[in-house]
Image 1 (tube, rainbow, N blue to C red):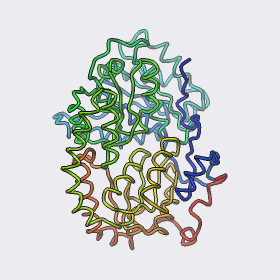
Image 2 (image 1 turned 45 degrees about the vertical axis):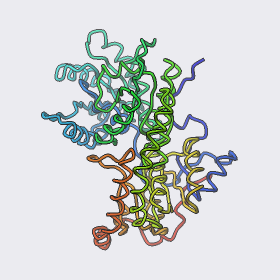
Image 3 (image 1 turned 135 degrees about the vertical axis):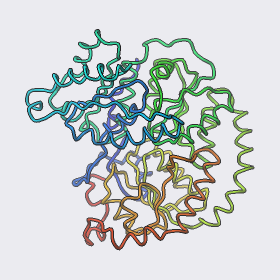
Image 4 (image 1 turned 120 degrees about the vertical axis):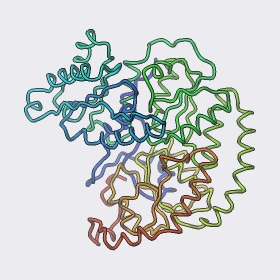
Length: 480
């Protein structure tokens, strides 16, 4: 009988989101099933899963979005909308569009009496204003707590509409693991937008799932690499369409650029439509690019061709890495990022001879264990902080470990005077073999020009007392 996945990442066995300690101990405890569910007695904010649900579908063409929430919950749309407009510019779109979003603006009266009338009104406005093919209805903590029956409303309104009403259940309180928001979006796509039965298979068609943080240059590079295998790419759901979504069941295989973005959905596609998937890693750095490319090539029956390409790229790229290694060898690094990107960056820095001293990631599970075991073989004595946000732990660790470089979103560590950079870049390819060279030079340039952060530190104070920096960074994690 096919499995039923709730969309809540905590429901998966051996998944943790509150954890901290030395990497070898964590790997050993996970292997020995000695890790237990933990929680923080103090938490400095979490990334809501609704943010990731919105990000997953916001750029879909001919779609409208209803956020069934108080007005404040829609604040995260501003970041997604900015990325959507920038992405259009990079793709050569002349008339830049904004996403079509309506917020039901639940207030205290709605919390008492229910917000269903506002939701019905919002659906009518979306149809009248935009004539979309899809209307996504995103739930919130408020609509979930008051119990608005979004599915029943959608079912009641659907017969009179051309647009497909697609509820996404991303109530923020359901999960502390923000990747659950991706799962909620894909569960809705599977339920409302895909057929129950598979259609004709198209040889060479590959579903390529990618989150919004993947740049257009990276998209082109990954599509080029798959093209070398004779594959045609169905790039979804970023800047996709209903037509491309409905082509998903016809694919020969699936893969994802981010290991946590569509992993559960690819399992669903395998079970429902018999579409195999390559569950690998984000193709950043030599090791991960090899693994990602060979993984999908084997599914397409092009393993030998892929190995020949990998060998030729090694012969071209590895000699060029020597100059970068001379600039970076021995430098100590702290990394923070999403689960896929943080582990990819941790493997990447080994290409440059750098040392990992700390790693912050939102989730720890079986896939993370595979990466940690690999990283433990090349890096020693580094600290792992499993945290959805929690910047107070990050600044404590960065302050005590004193890395030469911080890789990740720089907002907090930059104010400690540490040189900061990221493996994200909206204008250049960071993935594939040329991406390795670009990232190496980018990191080296930042390390050799640290003036901005060092001059910033004396004037941009962090909101923590000296006693916090002298405390155990994991003192608020219980049951570890």
